[in-house]
Image (cartoon, rainbow, N blue to C red; front, side, top):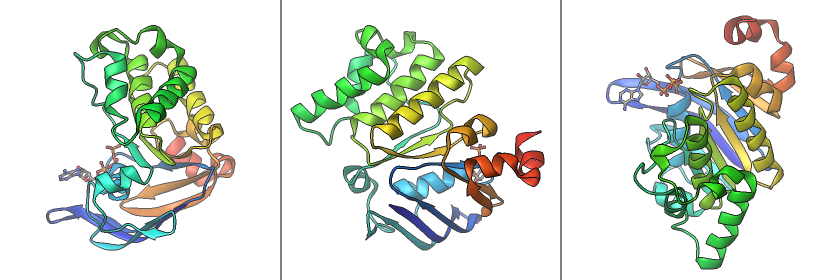
Length: 233
Ligand code: ATP
């Protein structure tokens, strides 16, 4: 569904990605792990078109999208939920969700909203509350919900569990599984490596802008080098 081939990218004189190869198949949860500054967010931003690829190619749904504008990528179903949530604090939960649905018509919007409320009942209960009054975990669910409102085929999540208590981390990761089960493919960047590998079909580990390891989630969890370097086990 998504293929990155020899992607190079960076900021000004800084070359961050040094030739990234990565693939996500339809129906998978794929994790992208690695240390701070390794290039995880940059990889997602190249896929969503927010950072241009300097070399290599990105294909999505058998189309070369390497030079495509990011709004067109969203319309194709390639949706990124950024780290840090970027909610509109003084707007209500429902208004924030509506902002995610600019590509949809009215009935599609209704259907997407029902799906989000089904996945996160707390958002339905608090739909008239301002986003800024919600807890960290609820805000994260709202950010994911807003991403789902764009009816993605591939949802990219950048550290959705950041700053959350362990119980909420599990809740968010359970929601990620439900999202996949509903037919949306997921590419997830996470610091909580062990918990993320447990729910992932496959994973990549990025080191200094290059893929250092890849494999099935549970295999990487058992790999001694990966455990020592990234899981602190
Ligand atoms: P983190 O977990 O810290 O977000 P990451 O693996 O997602 O790590 P990136 O955000 O991709 O890493 O950043 C890779 C490198 O690029 C870092 O050294 C970072 O400081 C640098 N960088 C990121 N964004 C910019 C920018 N807009 N301008 C200049 N340098 C940047």
